Image: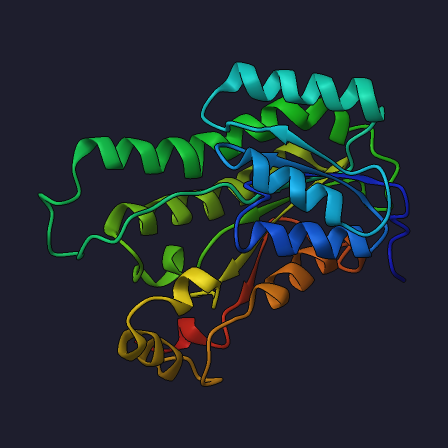
Length: 253
């Protein structure tokens, strides 16, 4: 039976991005009030919040590498909404560096990736746990971590990005055990997603990525958003799970 989420509150970090914006739209379509969390994309986040179906949406700063700011965000959501039922950790960063170019993967980039993709997700969970723990949703509050097939197959934009997503998946399992039974934690793990940015890259490379996928194409942002929504509304007995939305990409070398 589908979860009743009408009026529930969902916070999405990185909500103004190519994938995050679609996740926000899908959650709003399901009847949730969405807080679009942003780092540097304030204008885009506000426009998105204004465009979402339903009411009660807002755009708020969510700099995940600043633990004090994330605590303040949670306090603001508690004050203005009185609840938080869903946290989607969609904020992430990377940069293309060939895996063999170890010098090109400098310490500053390593620190930025790990601080955003791993520590940032943990900081968000830590800040919102008290609210999630009180969620009246069937199955409890829900945390969805946006991961990547890169964390499984070790193929991605750079070595540390792959490592960060492997860490995020492991953290999903640890948190699922630690926060049960009041909070569920699931990773949604796509392979390369066909965002507007990805479509703008080298066409030959783009087509090669699709050809390496058994289903013959890349995932769409809408498919990722649908998977996140399903975790909240339908998969109410799932926790500690890595939900692959990769067209079988992890099955191929």
